[in-house]
Length: 98
Image 1: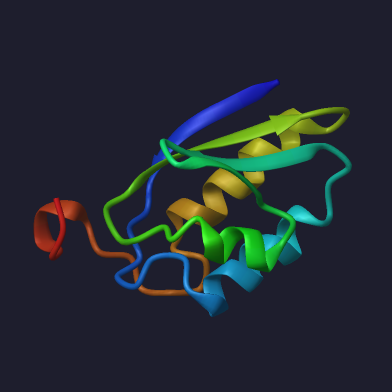
Image 2 (image 1 turned 60 degrees about the vertical axis):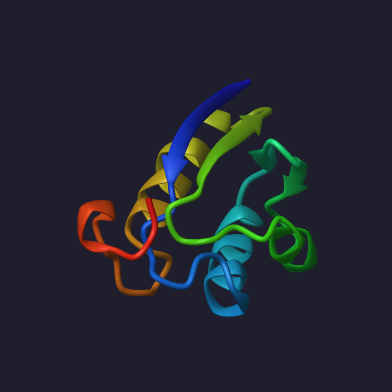
């Protein structure tokens, strides 16, 4: 298993559009992929699960990948998340949440 701690930098967090973008990308990998928060683990291959995580701008998540292609999945999904998942990225010091 590999993991990375990430801060969500798109203004609206993981609402429907970025959640769909994340899930579509996650489905390309064979490994299990989870978004972890203090409230629990959420399946990154399920839009409903990602939405249930209620990830907001400025929240820190842990992205966990476990399985055959875990390294590649982590690398690519990390880049996608840090890139805003198709949404505008706002650095924390300029944004509305800390």
